[in-house]
Length: 351
Ligand code: PEP
Ligand code: MN
Image (cartoon, rainbow, N blue to C red):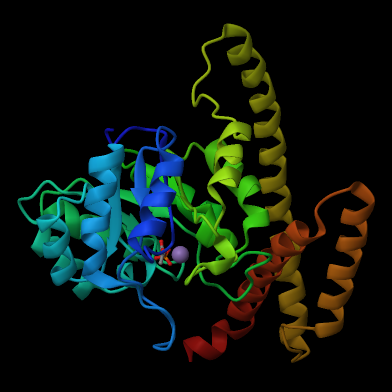
């Protein structure tokens, strides 16, 4: 089946562990997916972790393709991996999150693929660095390749319930800058636990992602890598049944008219919000002048505490997400402190 369709469904085990497990998984998914995935060189945090079976799994993937007709994909991290994959006719290779962070490694892979027209996917780097992700894509494009990307979440301090925080905003910014590049979402590595996967997968589809990459293992509890996040084939097929694939564009005048009204309303609210933020900043400037005259520090812990307390109580009463409002106020407060600091020190700095 053609791998590069929009709404591309990719599934398979985190790692190919044995020929039997690889084929068993692929057989269970036949007819339901576009591309079969299986990692064979696994970048692991500790050298004592299972690091994949290596090149001996390449014939297993070739057999999956031959037997089921499904396109096959694996992760590559260097030129040696690329050469072996090309020799075994893999349909797609992908660059993992730990490799995207290294321009040298990405360049090496791009050079090894130059002139091949090989399909290649680039996972986002582990850290939330948009330029690094775009840069990896550009290196491949300079080697005449047309990469797709995979959003698999980011390693950040505040991960919430996830293994890798989705930071959807960053993925959407990628899309805004490169609307020509299809983006898949890997809810397995975002979630880290299977219970969270369906909600994240649906959200990704609702954000117009072009497909999903999901880890599936016949016996997840026995998996040699990522046991907590892999789904059984049955659970995965059930997930495909409940996911709603909505259209990116409407084809109804009624929709167009109604949404235009709501958007006008939202624009008015946003205008007011911006106006209010501006007014707030003017007051902050007066506070800065006062603090400067009295030689008081810009940051005042009790005031910050009081402000957050008041606003979160209000958010709770209004049914607003308290965590969201706290994040908004952290940004507002940070900007206010920056402005105060600049005003309070402008003379000192100028001297
Ligand atoms: C994987 O897909 O198995 C993998 C290692 O993913 P990531 O590079 O997103 O960590
Ligand atoms: Mn994995």
